[in-house]
Length: 418
Ligand code: PLV
Image (cartoon, rainbow, N blue to C red; front, side, top):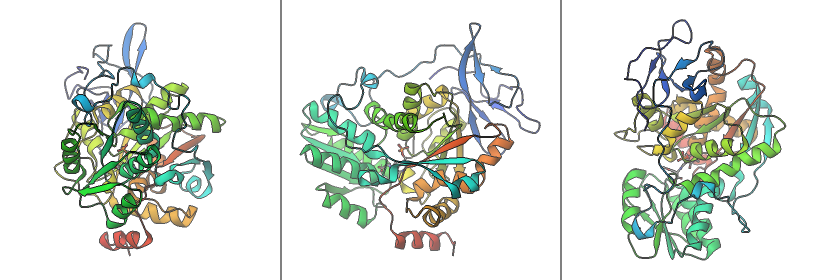
């Protein structure tokens, strides 16, 4: 982590009525309405500045050291230990494929009229819900599994809220290797069944993902077993980065923002890696979480990694009590605007999206869609964090397989939405 000015150092207000303070360690700003907004670190005339959103006139000088300390690709990560580790030196430079076909598909990019109407700007959907196993996870997890197999892995073990496990099971089946998926008790029986149908051995351990992950790490001590982390690994980010390269290929112009959901931060890290690869690192990212699974928001507010006491949100697939350290680094490298939505907003967004686009996604994905349906973009524009007018934005429809119509109904009743 870089050293930053002490917490509370005043900076010039962006707009009348907003009280901003620099957070320690990360280039984040706080203001009254509970949002966290981050600026890019930029260099000018030999000095480092925090670039603040477009409508603000004066950049704020960052008195932190210009060299941001980053964890090297070879450092220890959660999910890979000792002899089970894949050697990750230079992993970020590796391109997926290298003569071998990845497991994900090039997903469609479609303009959505209902979402565009709701957001007041052209909205493109990157449809990751149509990937094998129903979410973006196959991009990064598939890539990590392929690389691990090349290095002689004999058995995968993956902790998961559901979707990472499904991706690992799918990849393992393709690679002809056994896989154990450890899920918390909140992962429903339908998902466990799908995992078993894909040939995975399923173990239920703990009530939240973090507890399941502890068990997976124990199992990963077994000779020949490799831990497939659901979000905290450079090869996972590298695999997810393909999503942005596809966007660059299919969109005529650079979008004015990318909207996505954050759980442990793997998707965020992948999108940031992809933005750098295609030269789009100035595209702001709006990162959505649900309240009760808002570990990224909490970390930005504190300027360090924070462990939430519990996961109380219904969006269990966003339920990592602590995000990956890389997620915080991403907020130093790009403009990342963190937004917390209520469970009810995420679930309503799931239902509205089903009506509008005839696709059923998990509340984890509903969190990103809720940004559009609840006029958050307009608010961010009004406050100067996003440009006005916006030409177009992309929402990553991250999908999720752990949802059925009956479950959506149950969630609505649970949240009093009927
Ligand atoms: N879900 C992980 C972690 O769960 C899993 O094991 O499936 N959208 C969907 C549909 C997801 O399944 C997830 C992650 C995310 C978004 C968030 O992605 P991340 O973790 O890369 O930020 C506990």
